[in-house]
Length: 347
Image (cartoon, rainbow, N blue to C red):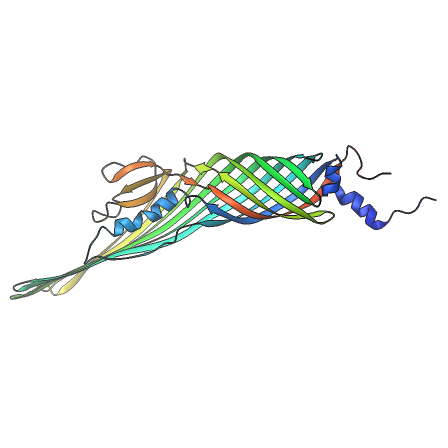
């Protein structure tokens, strides 16, 4: 009677498709590969970084008595994960179909304030002005990747290199608020008279846009067979994909209040208003006057159905948000199924 096969040998035979010994023996194997790590951005996301980095120079153009604040950190690393199905052919070659996701997220705020006081004989004038701006970006890229692999077995280690195209789906959400307040006080001591004007405006804008682009990725990796059927390793890849034709929608709402006081009348008059607007079109980048004549050098991303007019913008162009990065990721690979051209074991 033939000896009964050991359970361990049977499991090793059925699940061994993804092991290095099986693939190296000349069979075909299907592996599942999971990766997670960090991407080191080459330029912080393109125009997302340009919008951030060009804001401090604009604020510095206003000398004393203007004061400003700026709190907005640049992006250097972003999380990323990837799942991939690998079909290997013999010892050295393979084909991978993968799904990856990367997210850029950034929040920044800055402000500009001004106080004024002056006297002329019987007249004293004081004024306060403040502008506060807060914005939040979240951009993501979902990639469908086709990679061509070359494997080099080194005992229980396996070195590999890969390269291939990717089809990437980009998604961008941009929310920002700007708050403006103004108070003007004009006082005459003789004859006694007083004039006060206060204006407060609050505006919120939400933008959503999408873009689809072809990209490219290439990388190398080294993995170690920690069990007969599981590999653990590290991988580094370079990704290049630039989204430069965003299309989307924008919605905005604003409310303002104006209060005026004349001593000769002896009472306050108040007026309020609100506005809601929506627009769809392309995402544009420009440097322009979107908040008033005091701020004509603001780097801005904005959705518009037409190119921004030159009367309030400089060098308008379609915005570019890229995901160019060098990624460092940890990998875990295991077998899932097999086809066989020859058995790795002797009968």
